[in-house]
Amino acid sequence: MSAVLDVVLSSAFLAAVLRVSTPYLLAAFGGLVAERAGVSNIALEGQMLSAACTGALVAGYSGSVARGALCGVGVATLLGLLLAALRLELGADVIIAGIGLNLLASGGTAYAVFTLLDDKGGTSGLKSGSLPAVPLPGIESIPVLGDALSGQNLVTWLALLTAPVIAWLFYRARFGFHLRAVGEMPDAAASVGIPVRRVQYTGLALSGALAGLAGVFLSMGYVSFFVRDMTAGRGFIALAAVFLGGLRPWGVFLAALGFGTAEALAVQLGTLDVPPQLVSTIPYAMTLVALAVYAWRRTRQTGGEVAAAA
Image 1 (cartoon, rainbow, N blue to C red):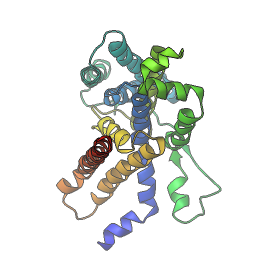
Image 2: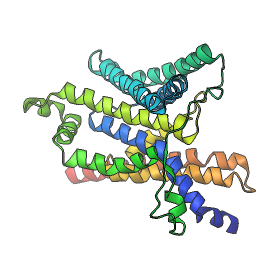
Image 3: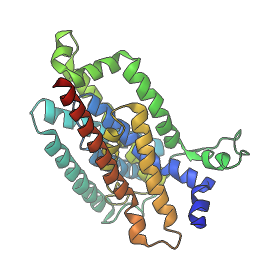
Image 4: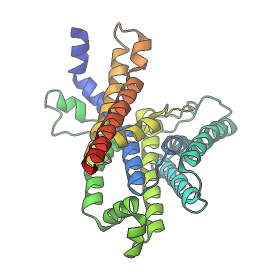
């Protein structure tokens, strides 16, 4: 028990929590924006995976990390727009369309890597480079926090800044008011002149971009190469964080951070004398518990509303 506490209370664990939480935070905020626009983004997993693969390949062949990151985010944004077109123009079921895009991304990335590199596993033979870390000279001397915060990846800091930016967007910016109006009452929004479809397309594009940044971090920040299906369900866990957070920016932030903490704990416990089967289940078990709590809260809220109406 003391060994576990030593791990949890260390600066290395705090640094790992921030690093591991980065893709959850970005993908969860992407899911939140889409949900507020009235279209659930089930394709977060595929958008992350496509961005991770594209970023690593473009960076490796062009020699530019920035170009790779931009192309990765761009591909995920296009997938967000494709999901919007399938739903809004063709009337496709958003869940089926999202799952289809996820399957397309899984097969498409594997095919692209094999075609270009003749490798079924990933891009480890291609030098992709990594996104830069950000040293913080002013706080390096602070115990625990200095070692944990200084040297984090640039995308990690962007992920941490996303919460206040999204909160400002939702509750202070005109576009945020339009987005929430469209998601809650599209007919009423249209009646007062809000361009419903344009707002939804913009929301889905922004959602894809955030998921793409999460994917780029996985292949160019978390590690420096792409591995087949390296998202490993993070997009679905991020979607769970959206609902666990009550569709509110700071709630989603805390939920995503919680999932990141669970995964970081699993990684750290893997170095101790703990059964690996138990360790590997921690993030997924926490996801199931979180969804159960969310369902219980929704049931209580619905029951209370029914009782009040009676």
